[in-house]
Image (cartoon, rainbow, N blue to C red):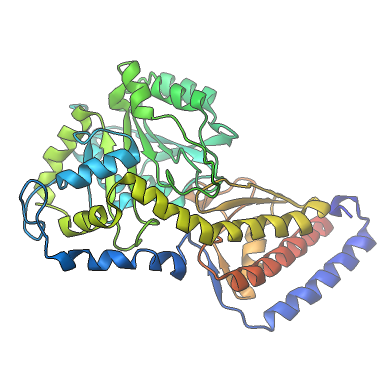
Length: 424
């Protein structure tokens, strides 16, 4: 029976029964972590062969440079070709960074603050700098701009991507808006892939600020959960069609493809953008880990090889996503106390509770031994105005652990919802 249709006595009985189930779980002494989108052990072991690729004694890049030594600031040529295919740019429109795309994004914002963008005034010298933030979104994006004192503006997500009417209006009217965070394929946490129209509208943006940039974090571009995945339009190609190619920075990495702590991060953009950023990058570093770049190229061979590798990831994690969605459908749908996304890729399921219940659900789970991403984390400043969004990360636990965690999560959703409705 839908909880909203229950009278007070029925709700009290429901709450008491659910509370007893919750107390039974607390007595189990669980200790499970679903707070981040970490690959599980089985996924990490898929890449162990990478550690032996130098057994052949070959350490020379195709241009003759020994990858163990200094040099090649923006990456070895075969890595540039390889990763250019992944993020959809040419090999002279890419920089190969270290292991973290988040670090590359932080550095790019920091450079805009200190030096400006293509000759524009450094952001640090401006009275106000603002960023648009599609919500719910990636908490670490928001932490970067919060660190620099940027004012963040919530942009609602739709089924086809961020609200483009709102974005077009805001950037055209306000030259203090300098950027927007985007996860265009399998967005974090909703799992939404931007439609062709959305990508084209981004490429055609006419911001009042000439140094406005789209931070296009294509983190999940090959992280599919289906055999026939969605493919989004190439934003740089679309921007070039309208002579607007400088508007976007594109980021990606192998963090959830090989080893999150030892992957390869990349950034793409127009030749003009990349050339300027390389000039500043060379002040802080001589070169990144070229052995790791070469290791990835030798292990996969080509981009097609990496895509086949991701099929193995899908076989491991897709059943976990299926279980979460099936459990929620069975237990939550009849009660009318939640909604969620059913993603075709990415690393998360976005759950929306009854308004005002997310923090309580996360608290209840934590007290019974299951750690979730903090309620509010998917919004700038950690403030979900409706206190309803919870990001679920199914990949890391084993299937048995996930089943137990979802049992508890569902009990906590029921209990928090009943408490909320009784309080009203």
